[in-house]
Length: 135
Image (cartoon, rainbow, N blue to C red; front, side):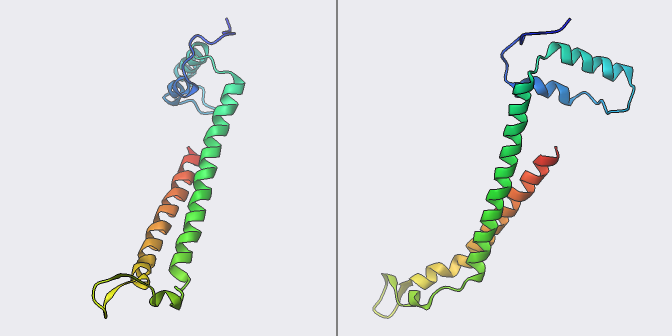
């Protein structure tokens, strides 16, 4: 007996979570696992359009994560490699005494540290997106 209508309007993520526990590999003939899988298929109605949208949403989020990671790596390496213009040495942001103060070059002196942090975050995003694409 086939289900032609969904039994519940639960989100597709919740309906697919029950399939993660079943260990059925193609080519195996374990009757208990196959019976459990058949029962899950009968109990959980999954439309092919819903499944396609779910897979597309997951793939798109992985691709966006990887692209943002690559962009962050490019920006981070640019902060590290590109030298600061010498015009910023003369700009004083906060003058403590007539001879001493906080220059704009002092603030941009931390650009290398900020660049390393940005590269680290970008690399994490790339690895996180690549790890999710294999699961």
